[in-house]
View: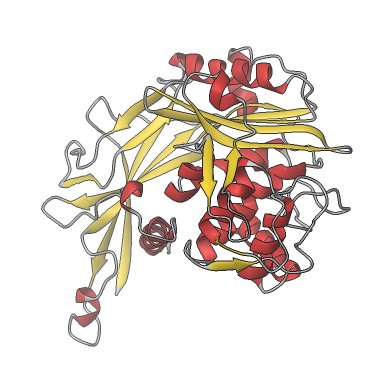
Length: 395
């Protein structure tokens, strides 16, 4: 089966716009917020667009911000109702702790709450050993996930963030990691929790954990994510907040005034880069027989909305296979007809699939409907989309 590609100037209903600028380009026209951080970044969670960056690719120690990666890897590779046992190596781990007993068992879900609310290093090691077979095995999973997400300036040596040579990340990478993790409904629920109780098998009283993230109580709309501190990393913080349907995440590394700086960063993002609906699902593309396969929301400054070019790329199959059309019937693209590429200054910044009118269009996932285990369902959906788009992008 031969694939023919048509590239057509995209004529859409006027509402259909899409844009993206790099962080430095965005700051060229809009003055970013001042911070006391050695490095900082601000990201729109829905789109993954970095809205502000200060030395964002500088590789630094990240302390317990490491646990963002620990949590998402554990959620994706295990079940929340698994029993996690505290081994001798996890017991009495230095630094912040849940004070778990040697040999104690706790569900992975409850241990994740302790990990993210109280930053338990003992929980981090116990989780790592349970999921990865050992801390070393889990670290391999962490670095593999970093590679999959595209974190090009990150490397992990442990699951807790205690200072270690070769253990580092950047503000930009942590922003991308956080945006990825916040698409997971389990992760999102855990980090937004202010107080959590869990059964204690060794005492008459329950565990009771109060979230260390003061942003949950200081900033309107705050809903996560993680604090961190070591003597070498100094104060580190990732926070997130949602207003008017838009979720932002801010990152600072080595910042002695992080609470106030995060409030300024988040205010900046909400004011200057509001989330805009730039495409609706099943929106007709003018002068064609195709419609958009999904909606698209994107953070846009007012000055950016007229600086976009759009191309409709259609793929047509010509001829039959030797199996008399059987290949056509098993084509994974189904009614997928092509895509719309969005470009800014010649750079591809986004794509939306388009379908023939009347064909089946897969629904977008509803993360609140994800089952136990969290992101697995959403990841499968995303993987399916990647496979379909790869099919279209192949020569």
